[in-house]
Length: 339
Ligand SMILES: Nc1ncnc2c1ncn2[C@@H]1O[C@H](COP(=O)(O)OP(=O)(O)OP(=O)(O)O)[C@@H](O)[C@H]1O
Image 1 (tube, rainbow, N blue to C red):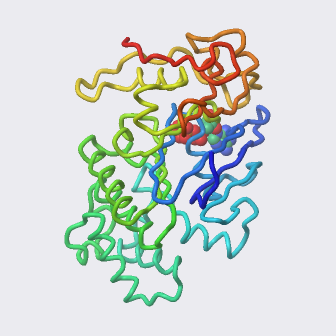
Image 2 (image 1 turned 45 degrees about the vertical axis):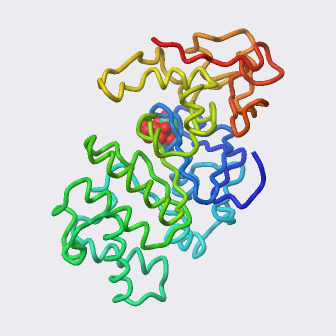
Image 3 (image 1 turned 120 degrees about the vertical axis):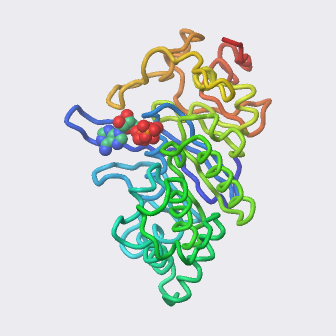
């Protein structure tokens, strides 16, 4: 990783919560960066820590969650943020789009009222009329026809796909520096999924908006994300330019995820990943994927959890000791063999 004005930067972030069963480690030594104008995907099975990473970046973790390390968004250290500064940060700097658009909107308030409130929370100097004009502009930008009529409508009067566009518009009226999307298409049908991804891509190219998309479905982000960060058991397994990671994965977990993804054309689910991820309550030593890994070696039992840069592949990191320098089997690629 190099220096520069990143829009989002996590350095050695750990998140833990105390549960009745003991301490749950939800994130373990997670570091990654998002450059201005980049689209970055966080991918991994359910429970890998994707949502936790996004919620931590927005300071939306449940009370009682302990955060270590540093999280910087648009130059601001978010971990110590409190009061007015935190409210302004959440209203303006970084905005989140959740999986379920119905839960993001108040069912009894008109769409216009909610967009106007979002715009004015981010910029209290904005008049109601200007906020309404901005809201109509943003509805047009996200592809909602007849924006004036839509502003008067209520959430139950529009379809799921349109509602997700409206939720995205509600974020955009705040002119955020960063848009965080947690499984933004999972609740939608396949055609609408593609349209929402296309919209995110368009907003990225038209507005230069930096976007992070968390998804369990690698296929979803294949054409959208510049970079892919694969997470497993609350840690980063590997990272790199999306095309490279998908064509030549450098961690057996990524390979398993790719093999498990349903085929885009036939829809057939290929090989499911054997076994289960470790519980967040488990004490992990060595590589957390080793118990499920067909390539495991003795060295995996003491492998560090943090990924290391790959000497011959700029911008790529892997936590697999078989592929990182200075380890047994150093530099050996993991071939994407057919199943
Ligand atoms: N407040 C909490 N207390 C205890 N465990 C939690 C808490 N919040 C999350 N977890 C656990 O932390 C792990 C990571 O969850 P997280 O939601 O970040 O994963 P994810 O990759 O986003 O998965 P999903 O796609 O299912 O949301 C999961 O095992 C989850 O059960």
